[in-house]
Each structure stands twice: as structure tokens, then as C-alpha cells.
Image 1 (cartoon, helix red, strand yellow):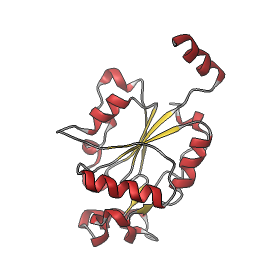
Image 2 (cartoon, helix red, strand yellow; image 1 turned 30 degrees about the vertical axis):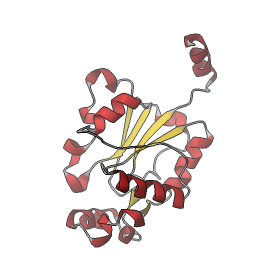
Image 3 (tube, rainbow, N blue to C red; image 1 turned 45 degrees about the vertical axis):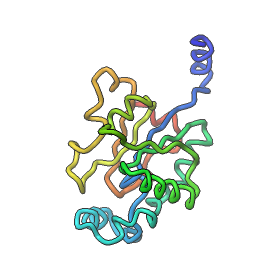
Length: 178
């Protein structure tokens, strides 16, 4: 098995696992549409009405298009939800389906789990998250809390909260470059 896996890596067929955070990274509250990044953050901090209406969330800019490009190149997408309640995670899944996001399992914290526990368990090649500006910055992010022995195995990419992933490379190989 190891030999076959190494051959696939050499030939460029390795299925890259991309874990991507949902809220603030790929989806946002509906009243943020047409607003700039700073206003979107302000709305989140102030808990503007649509911030808590999870079933009405929308993609941030061209997130769906970007993720589909990566999937076409062989990536598999794993979504990370901020929710802990199953009914809220179901709302996330509904939003993903409604807007045509690529298929991917949605992970969420359960039983006093932290985000880092999920990432350490699923071990993605790439972790994409936002900078958590509206909720406290780096102390709320995932990657800084991952155990040191795993940090070299997971590439961290941080985008500004509510700015989306449009600025990330289209070529998935570029996502792995440190």
C-alpha cells in the first residue's frame, strides 16, 4: 500500500484533502451581501439579525466556483462548521446544497471537542480558515492550537474574515507551497 501511495504522489495523482472553515471563510450571513469586509465584520460583532439566521447564509463571493476548480483537479473538500448542535449543522448542509458547493463531509465539534481535535483527527493536507477578526483573532483560530508534531503535515492558509477565498490560487498544487 505504501508503495502504491508513493507512486501516486510521484505521478501527481495524490488526492489532496482540503479542510475549509465555513462561517466567515466560505459562507456568510445574507445581509452582508454587497457590503465591504469591515462592514461584514461589524455586522457580525453587533449580531445583526441575519447573523443568527443560519439557514439563510450565502456563499462569500465566488467560493463555490473556487472550490469546484480545486475538486476538478482532484482535491477532496472537508468542511468545518462552527456549530455544535446537529440541527444547526443541518442548516449548513442545506446552504451548501442550495448553492452547489462540492460534496464533502461537514465536521463539527462534539462532546467538548475543539476544532484542533477535528483537524488532528482528519489530517488534511491544507487547512483554510479566516482570521476570526469578529470573535477575537488568533486565539479563536484552529492552526495555532494544533499540536507541534502535526503542524508540518498541515499547510495553514488564513484569509481575512468575510473576504472569501477568491484570492487563493486556482491551481491546487500552489496551495501546498509554503
